[in-house]
Image 1 (cartoon, helix red, strand yellow):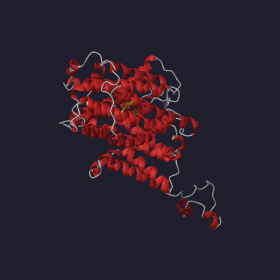
Image 2: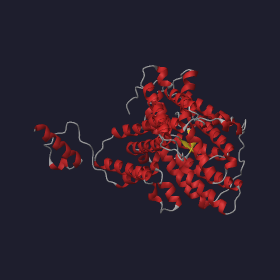
Image 3: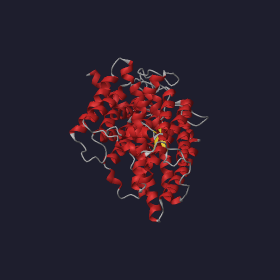
Image 4: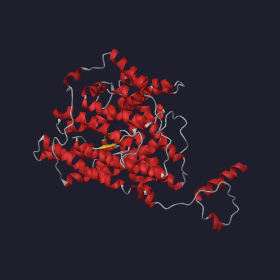
Length: 478
């Protein structure tokens, strides 16, 4: 990849405290909803409403702890990039299915949680094991596959951003002009500020846009802080509060999702490397991917210890790096500290929860789209011959297809539907499968190839490239 000329502070740079805090807070704004939403969905579906404040606090606490580990890199654990950790959406369906099964057996709240923590911890060990030989699976890390995965990550996140911009999932007034207008206003404020030549306006664009949007919503009476009075003052971590249980039949779907989650993490970290001007080939890159996947696994073990759900590397924060131009590790550490404090002091998270969904959608939509652009940049640097074009088109078609028509998995077993319903997983599986079975079509033509070679020599070349070049040569002559 060519260097990113828009980067203001690289991985090893040390911006001052004010710049670091400003950039870190914008990462938190971009990822906060993603960190707590899976917990809210799982708890509500399993009738664990009374446990929600504690579970949300632990989700934030572990996110902070995991982000520090992933960014700082402790030994072999961690990528050394600004890679924000958070509760993964990929496991929601499998964990709800497991919890529902325990409920059907007459299980209590504690028994449900014990089972979810047990199978989550055991599954995390699968990802830990995979990290030690991921470098041997080089085809999984080819530029075409990682480009496809990154693009599908960005495109799938765009749906999340647009849903929030229109009012948020489940809103009774979804799509009303007040939501859309507010979200678009925030979006354009961020775009124009980010395009400014002023360093501070660019650095603070996301924060300013969201602050102005929230103030506007508050002036119309659409922001409430009444829920803060119900939150505890402190939430202390309590390892293994619910205990640990295990059931192999419930563990298997979770273990499979961990395998595909590792592929998604590799894509996220590749995009992160692109935006941070780091290599996406060679030993340094492989070491980052191995450390990142190992970090995901270890952080998911810690998540189960601290009574929350599996963690993964978030992709949405890559867009924040692109917009702010700051890739410094100091920012990653600051993000982790902020999340740790949010977990211990629930009122901090409560304030962030009050930000209107439309404001969040307006801010995150452009960041998510930037992730997709990062994937396209990787694909554009590859030779898109007939083979790679087929792989790219088919993988993105399948990935976006399951996102746009989720009902296609209605007849699948629950464990299988949970795997293929993810557009990122579907795109990744399709890309890997086709990359393995489709034969190579030949090498690209040399730049100064002369077409008076012998038929024997021309057969060695990609027939599509030969034909396209002949046509181009003929048209130029005409």
